[in-house]
Image (tube, rainbow, N blue to C red; front, side):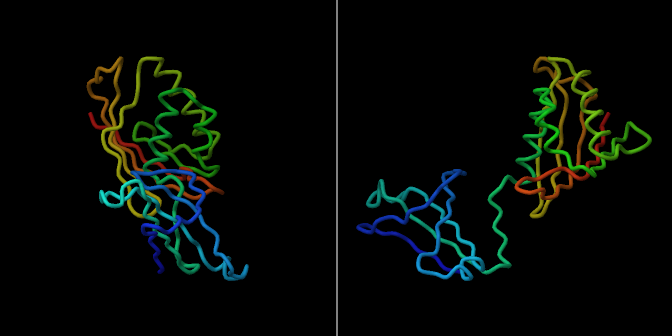
Length: 195
């Protein structure tokens, strides 16, 4: 692993930074003077954060991280971020975007039904009925969202009507995700209701 830091008087490295997270800015920087085969074997990301020391105020500290092929750098959304966006789509009745979060071969298990829903078509039919039945005033409110270091996430939630919690509507859901091109999709969901 290699690290570089720019100090006073050094020009900062040029980086294309598409997204900022918690004060850090992620970007990619090409390897200057390296062969194409070397670039294919390496990945590089730059973390930029304003220096907090007053003597370095208004200067950037750059950290460059590089590793071999087996280093898996995840810059896309995490499973917990994706699940939060998924619930936002449900609450906003945005079925077109919601469709993008469901894998073609997904399985949704709901303790209210005898059989699990299988496949995107059946699952999307369920969400069409769910969002229509919720009306404009019922929302799913996420209480806790957690994830492991892989592709799974868990959620505790409850229902609210005009910001008032509806009694006996708490539940939890477990999600397994998979990578589809440049995004995460849900391949398995297990939903339990707590009365």
